[in-house]
Length: 197
Image 1 (cartoon, rainbow, N blue to C red):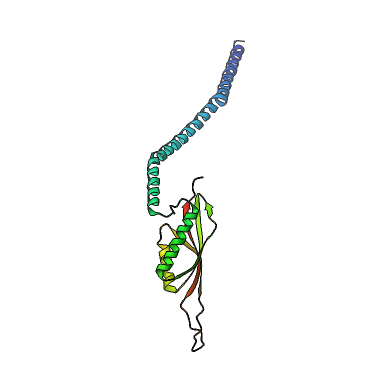
Image 2 (cartoon, rainbow, N blue to C red):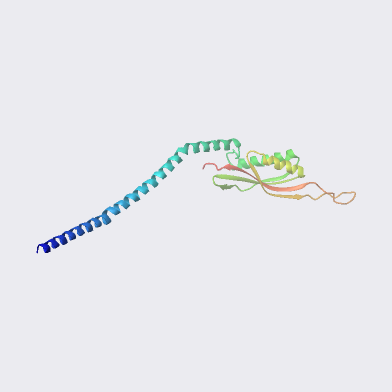
């Protein structure tokens, strides 16, 4: 009987220990492990956020350098006079036409006509195009194109069409004498900032 009671007592103790181990295991798996996992996840997130914060701090540290570089570029851009400084696109077109006329006359060519074309507005800039018709030999054309290429404000030549001019009939030989003259049509385009509305 004492042995039975002792066995019963040991059995109850074993059950109690088993129950205790089960409860402890349950607490570990249900409460402690999720807390540890969440802590690890939060730690990784903290590391990632710290890294991102350091990147932003480096970027902000360079902010003044970038601002200074932008200001220097703006000043350089203003000094180079790439854009027309006229107040209106009509004045810019007139300025461009006068510059082209002077270039042709100085090179010894003949200006047939200039015609302003519709202004093209894109990205806060206006393109001021004109059509030009002129005559002259190849040296005249070279001089005119050089003058346009080196002009300020910036002028771009587009859609150039060069054709030889027909010679004049010789009264004595009744043959057509060859001519070095060229008929040249092209578009020239200058640029200006879009005026504030």
